[in-house]
Image (spheres, rainbow, N blue to C red):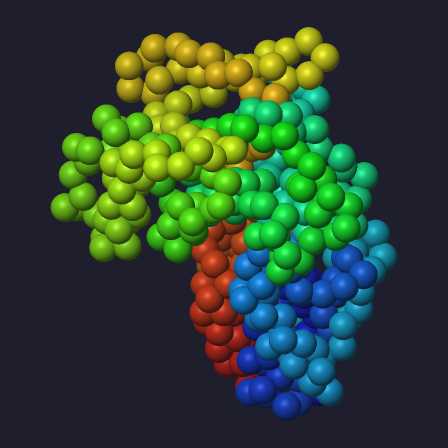
Length: 362
């Protein structure tokens, strides 16, 4: 009987456990989870109004129900069990701990009240235990730095009405906070141009259907974009941005969602809290100032250090060569490749690593 330890019970860890248990019945798998519940980003990272995406937890639960698989919650490597103990007690150790720490802007004023990382902020509205203390002060003008789906998720969650949130998985506290916000402007900013955004079309299109929000895109930023060298999925994103730019406001809305491109953050200013974001136009070098009451940075995540486990300081993730950390120890998911890709990406990478492990354990 082979023994496997998988650290992290999110999609990557559960997908890996499923394949190993299904293909090799003589394997005992222990899944270690830091929190009091499993499934990682499948519940903590998916927006609370995207319940269809969260349904993947039903599949992951079937893995946990397998007789070869045992889940150990409230167990953190480096605190409750050491890295050396894992290596001594198991034939193989696989880290699937994700990347939960917010990357910093590293600009003056980042410590001001009203500035939040997207990891912390999304954990707040997903009622994650690490963010139960957070009581974000948003104000009327909210900035979001980042041109990925996380930025769109945050903007959408903030802009939805209570009625639109009826089917969202929100705690009573968060539901009340969102219902009583005074937001009038949401600014979505990125350092690069429209061709470099990493939105996906469904998330971008969804912004255009919100009851109390109107999307604004600068016409001169998107009307002359050459999309001939882009994949079709990215061409469709640019076309949607162009549609937003061309539309005339047909109704009075409470919230304006404004996209900004080629905007590099320089510093944040304020006395008792955030008051403004100082920017530089990436192409022209021209400075500008945007008045804000709060700012959420959605510029990526990094894997926390784990005592004893080799770490890549430059890439801010576990150190490895083609998933191999050291003999008998592997990594998979965001702690292996960085915070990129969606749940199906984790599934395909877990399948690849599972085939490799099964061949080793023949």
